[in-house]
Image: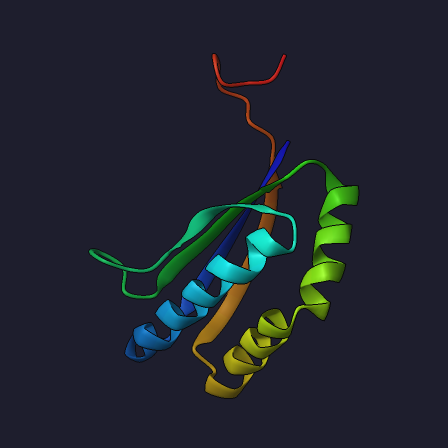
Length: 106
């Protein structure tokens, strides 16, 4: 199992747009095959950092999921919404494997 963590830098004046973007992914991501942990928006502290976290079985599964997401009507709409409204200033994506015990797969 791999966990994808997306770190966003968002425009702090457009938090409401990021919240809508997050709710849309809350529908589209699970429908397309990834196990969504959630999207997280700023609350205290930084006003510009936000995260999206989901799990996939492996990188091959990730590629299948991304292909489905690209064809999903809400996925397409959400991507276009983000491009049009420009509330995402920067996006970094990393894949991590769980290493802590007793949670780690042995």
